[in-house]
Image (tube, rainbow, N blue to C red):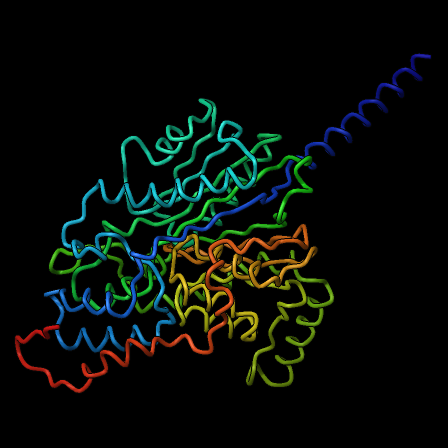
Length: 459
């Protein structure tokens, strides 16, 4: 009898353990319920006319800088409808202030969060985890505190303020929330990602620091995530995997993208010549972990076999074999950091123009919106009705440090038809060419000028 009771007790303990493990695993999922991208008002558009005035009123620039900016603007892949910070539009970029900087952040954060809560029927008081990823600005109280105060959130909300993470911050935040969900069951989480441009507009003449002024534009996003299994049917996507790589131990990678002062004391971002190499290494190291977990076994075996035969027959000469990324993913959300970044990623991943179209069009319409950029890319895919239930999306984000943080999502429903920020322009996309020909037409005369010592060009 005692033996029977002992066996029964052990069996019940085993059943309880299995049931508990099942419940824990069930509640450790990470679902995306909704997201909102920020669209600035039309009076903040940086069209050709506005950009020309901005460049020509910078007294630190000379003919060499004008020619560099003209060439770069034409080929950057940026269109006529991107948005700039208010002080740049108003012509006061020389004197940024804290109130203007916080106003810019408030417009983005509160503008996207208001829509996020309204569209998903979730009250701010239901939020359990709040993550803010806005670099290059400091406030006291903190930015998350401003959100908590605005929406009167609960006093036990778990708060995280990630600063200085750059263009890869939103994926870092998603990975953080995913890990927190393993501890906090049945929770809602909100992520807000943006960048503060008003206090960080570069006003000097160093080429490596002028490029961010051309690429970076006003934007941001808010995400609503949950691990509640009861919300699965309402979710847009389910997180399958996230992988992070940080190459900051390398001096070249660490110094490839830094915020510094130039010789004149002007602060800005410096993009070094080692950036492409740092980015390539970061992507490679990340994929060494991610791809074996996501690509089908048959593709991994094929690649290993072809690589082995190539090394034996060709002595490692000729075209190197590559993995077929489309065997594991149907869509690719690549960080719209610039045309060169997109081209390089397309070549290395073996993607065609159809695959790269969402990223190119997001860059053309909204510019490089830092950590929010990949969500503008996703929004384009939704607006074009590309996504189907069961599809897998690879999000690739790159950031200063140097970091490569990627995640894989599974689409949970077919009816993803929210055009979000693309509502008024999706019918015009894709454009045939992303070259800014209007800028070239208006300012091509700059290339015909001969340099004269100590002479500045007047508008």
